[in-house]
Image (cartoon, rainbow, N blue to C red; front, side, top):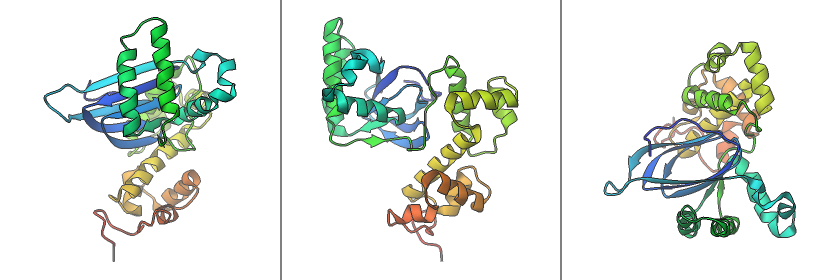
Length: 274
């Protein structure tokens, strides 16, 4: 595995199983640390990367198993049957990325390892068994926020991926339209039109969602109070931050924390400000 990777975005769905490493996971507008093993299912054109930072067991190499597939591999008619209802629902959630728990990882691991070595119909059979394991997982975590929408299929997906990569690397700083347009060598007017056509959102809206997603994580982690999360997420104005937070999360930062019974005035480190 490479220690640092850039964002990827592609037509195929992806199943990723990571072993013996830890670092940072970035999927859609989701940013969090990861501690492998972990198993994630992602839908089409969902920007994603894992920034591997540490090997857990130095005596073994870190591993990443990746499976790409198209959701229509069983045929549209099959996915519309009552028996495949749960699979169709899983594929819909995959647009935001799905993280599966440890017991599901344990059941999926041998199927994934064997599938990569199998050929012919045996591979199809194993893949269906793998889908059955994922569908019947009792718990899982949907990663990107409900407000996040991955770019629809487009021949310009590589350009979109470059833009998302730039956003995630620089969202804590001021980003002008001139700067982001230059990433894919477009005029600002052409870039705005291109970005809206491919993501169904404005660049400003996407940047806002990424920043607020990061701020929400900092608040829930207990590492920052509201003002700290504001300035650490690319905002220099608390009033503007509160306004954007409510637009994205449906409530103010304080109300967001109260639902988790967390003191919104605590200072970094978990103590309350007096």
